Length: 100
Image (cartoon, rainbow, N blue to C red; front, side, top):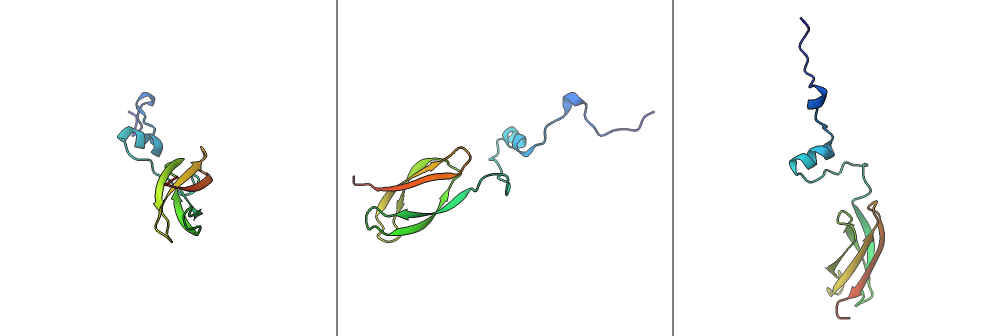
């Protein structure tokens, strides 16, 4: 009689890679440190109203997009345009007035 084994037959094995488990259970992906490009970037945003530049942390997980952010100096709302490449690196940031 052979010793019992805890191994599943080859046709019953499950891939336990974290990305596969996330998909299997419908979970949000986990970003492991060092495994992906930076998830955020610090950049300077020039205000199209007052001309002052203020720093802001940009979230890169949403890829390229356009959103509204208030100037930290004059409080005017400005449109921020982000261009992020497929690798998740910030390629371009621009701002513009909303009343144009």
